[in-house]
Length: 195
Image 1 (cartoon, rainbow, N blue to C red):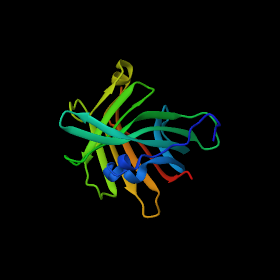
Image 2 (tube, rainbow, N blue to C red; image 1 turned 90 degrees about the horizontal axis):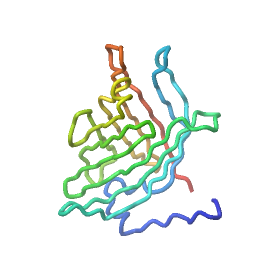
Image 3 (cartoon, rainbow, N blue to C red; image 1 turned 60 degrees about the vertical axis):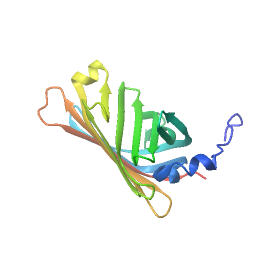
Image 4 (spheres, helix red, strand yellow; image 1 turned 180 degrees about the horizontal axis):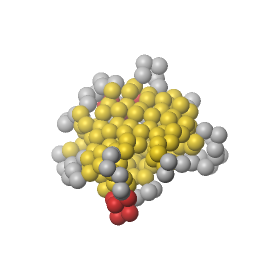
């Protein structure tokens, strides 16, 4: 640990209000990642490692709505390389009253996603989605990406495993300029807690 970093202290009162996100608080790493993206010559598969931090927060009060969540950041590097190829920051949010889970994030390409779904406090599989044009769970892009690589849909499935690890699979559906078929940019990984 860097001598200037303060160790993370998890507030137990917040932790007990995180619903199905409670097991995810902490720092995680995984090197089993597979990214399938589009290149000029078609789909390309990249193996990657990843580090994700999920820091508890809350309550966030929106009038009668009360949210608890995790502020998160993730960085991914192709295996064997030092320069990351993906970063994102955002929030995973839990609305206990409505049993809604949300993942709100932005990537430094100028894309913002607000994905959501239903879950209960005991769920071990969490699914969230967003669609372009939706005013509830939607996707926004900068003008270039909206024309050249428009994100049409985003689907995420998180699985909490009995050994304490978790895995995810996400599908970002793109409408690529000049192409008739939609492209499925997929990512998956399994992460374990950093001790």
